[in-house]
Image (cartoon, rainbow, N blue to C red; front, side):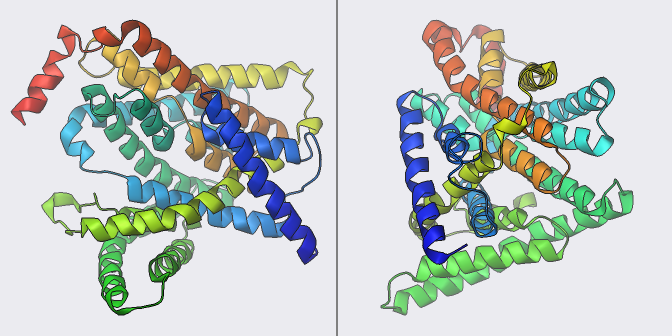
Length: 415
């Protein structure tokens, strides 16, 4: 691609994604849906102006890594202490049930291979913490008990989802399921998560010291992006997807991060806040490129929309993905209305689900019909939660803190 053509394409991608995101938010739809639609409009599905070239794909890869960095740096693991075992129950149920039910439906009902079925189940597991936080914040419920449980569960979902993504990545590379390879990857991931925070802590101390003496602006974003790229490269070296490195870097630099077993790395909150503030504009530039690329990779014209397969596939997995998250919420001891609110908040897959789907497409695991079906399912779950939660709280919000939920509040007060 010529330089001037690439620059024009990049200009169109950035402007169109922003315009579509603004339109989506105006209609109370998550911005990620607007960015996805921008890719559909610009790509072969509609206008055919832009194709996902190698250069754009590389920028999208950077966008994924920085997006997972943002997820990591916003992750508040201390919420797990506040919400306690209720978050753990919701997270484990909401992770295992979509994974198992998605695999069973894909393997035994639709007749897919084990690898395709595992990727489908994996795409249904993780909850989009970004969308969940946004919706609960809009409703002023993020500090309520059900909000704390949901956010704590979403944190666990994110961590387990990224680890599952690394395992599925290994399957896609090796072309099959290998217990030895999985054990090796999990061992490397465990060591990576244990050593990365320590390395990031010392590097951040060095950055902070240099920043105190530097008169040239831009030190923090340059060094932090270098750190994220280093972690992404190391993740690839140990056999995990590069985006795992971005997530680990964000988690390690989070002002709310602490190591297990009470061994804390006391982070300077103001410095961590400066990192987050200065990195956000860069993330906001690159992450939309990833979502637009997902839309560009989806050629709607190649799909036989008259075939019942795509509709049966999308509807079946949509129902499974919603019911499985609700099943996880129903496992805790709380009032039925509170459990419904938690289940609704755990439904959106958003950017995390799209990362799974894109990995399945790029590695050749998903054909175009399955990929399109998964994008439809992820988009529907992302759209459902904001509208359903707003309707739910508008009609039964005052009854959410029911007497049946008092058990959780009492146990939290005792802690």
